[in-house]
Image (tube, rainbow, N blue to C red; front, side, top):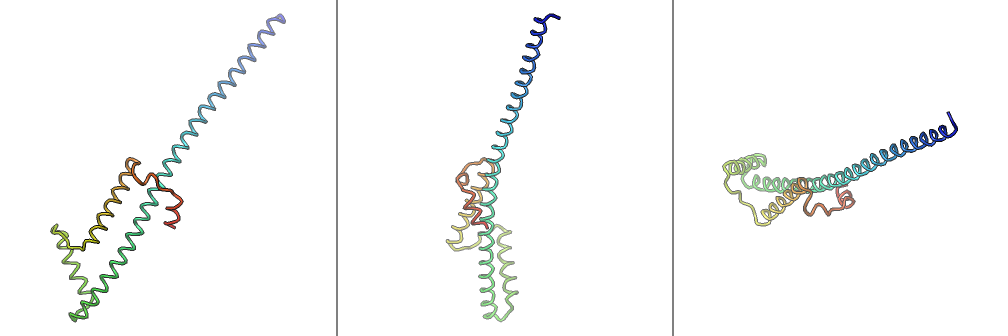
Length: 154
């Protein structure tokens, strides 16, 4: 082979090698940007899930606290009524619960004071807000900051 042919072959092999490395670099860059976009998307989803979980835990804690208060009120009423009627507090609680459960099962309106029904409506609205956020990612929950919610839940 002549020097000229060898030179052309050398140039072609250098060009082919550079093209191969360029193709490999472009492939890596494309995969890397896909991965970065995927990670960012997962972070956004994770942030939304964390916010939803923190909101739900906060509401759950509030519900448990209210339930403890209601059980304390129930016990106090049962003790007072039992003292007046001369029966046990457990008997009073059992009979009152049976009456309320019967009204609930027969779908009769259960009497509550206006403050309790307003609190109930707020609770239902909060649950609907969580459901809307979980399904669509819309609503007031989207603006929650995770740090405040983490501090409150801890």
